[in-house]
Length: 330
Image 1 (cartoon, rainbow, N blue to C red):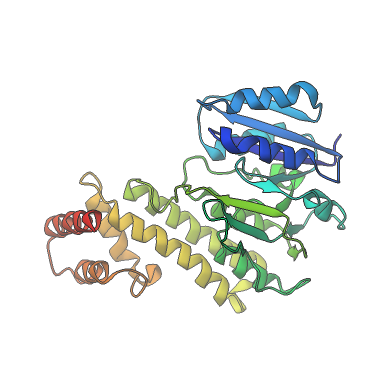
Image 2: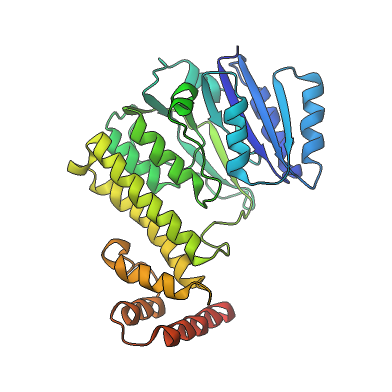
């Protein structure tokens, strides 16, 4: 049985996939399996996976219909043979010491090991990479500071080592019906483990290829509402389990920043079928949402009118559509 399973969801990443796979196969730590989950790719990504598997026995390939990133990762969790897993996105790459940095550490079931992430802009050769969690000191053991920085820097599921037995015992999977699935997965995992440890390595390279953000994608507002409800609920569980309610203001603030971004998207993506439900929910949660000061003046005005019921909902919905058209022109 290999010591670690590397799970890579693959979907239409033909130009970048070979670099990703090569970087994994080039690891100084070699006792691993590589699980490639082809999520119904329509380009040559699936064939590339099969080509590598022909001569590399550590690779296992699974082909599925397109069900999304979360489903692909969940399949990898189900198929993994090791007791430790990590995730690598198929258009990113890792340095040769990425796995050894994890495996040279004392492995404890209740400790989440974390590496920093280098944000590389592939469209700008002269741009300095940005490092996630770069403000933290090497070896910092304050888990609350690590939590806060983790969620302030994108809450990626990558660059972390997870215990598979713990995941399976708690039936922890990525929620396939959600957007921003990484945030929810991390919040849930952190509420289970007892501690985190930040390693002094930045061996994971997140490549920015103008990939779409969930906050820029078009979803029904009810999708964002469901996400926010679950995030708030899981945050309360995390606070209860970890005692964060005493010193966790920065953590809550960071997570609220994410949630505010989703609420902003929800406000922009209201459709006629659900606008009454959306407006009602936003009014009932205005003290939690904390939108003011985080968005443009026109949306602050909209929320002022919404929360104070200064216009009928039908008129507010029309106003919102006008604002969206203006934003599209600009």
